[in-house]
Length: 92
Image (cartoon, rainbow, N blue to C red; front, top):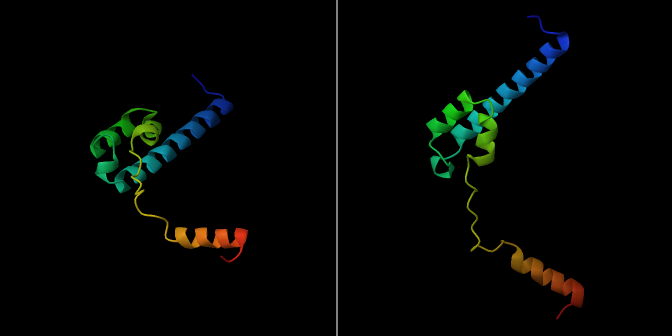
């Protein structure tokens, strides 16, 4: 069976995208703390290798959202609010 040049280019492009996604997924996987992952690191590494859509699955569902500290106010919140009030209503 011979492939047409168009098919060879298409398959090569898909392989390049797949290997790029695999490399990116592994970099993110090994830099992400284990507490932020939905499965153990070894499981995600295997999923990324075995399945064609493994890296996409990792990026979509592999990481928990980073926790947000809502108790700490923005450092400039008070001064920004005071400046806006002064700009709108003049010095009080």
